[in-house]
Length: 365
Image (cartoon, rainbow, N blue to C red):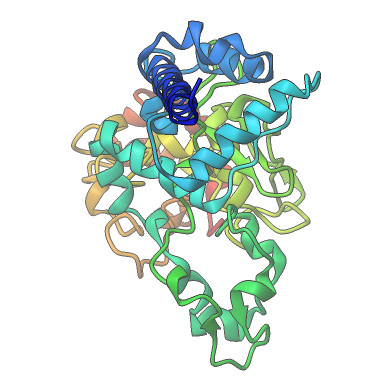
């Protein structure tokens, strides 16, 4: 056999191998990309718990690629992740490696959220939760009164990959403050995954889930503790709504759990026991339609509740809508007087459950 013939055979064999490898690789990627997740992702034991949580989630009808991206990709990070899973598979790892989301992951998934939930995304963009790193960490008023600390990242920037010292300089109350990475300036500090998780934890759980930075994982609202709140040493009635527990993890009182301290807005007075979501829309946080949801056009006092002197009407009002009580407006009047003023209507309707407590509501809470 001549050398030329040997070279031709070798080249042919090599070409066949290359074509076979490409066909096998592209075919496998295409199968994973378009096939039923039950027959692709779910077949790897390393992904078992993640697939199970996806099956129990609100996204169980969505294909994996809709959130995790296509298998047919040239993205180096994605290819690296695929290679790592293959290596883990051939190492025959028994324990599943936990999935820790970087900030880049969270922002990429937020883009996927926007495609399927445009209305919710638009509502979020109009809310105060759509703040960015500049809004939060370069705020002179806050930074001069309270020094930035690691705990800031618990609620603002929980997916940030570094420490507070890596984010802002200087860590002091004098300033001026700058972001060490200017690219962070417009990035959101409370992305979708701060309060939601793509995969659920168990069937029937609500979509609200809190991402806990220290644990690098999300917890279902039902699994969060109810924060006890006290007023003058007495316990305040707290809503049993699991979503309220999520809100109070960040809108929290001081270490003594005192009503209205720090960023606590637990309702008292006529609104005691209500959930945040009874008045605030979940994504926009708007409370514009909240009064009409429970109240008639006129209150039991014969007044339009939306025009009463509260922070619902004007933010500068001294009557905070979270803490307002009948006695704030009817100071010094006993229950009989209030009943007469309302034509006896205070004994019925939405505020009936508060009627027995009216005598104790005199004065500012």
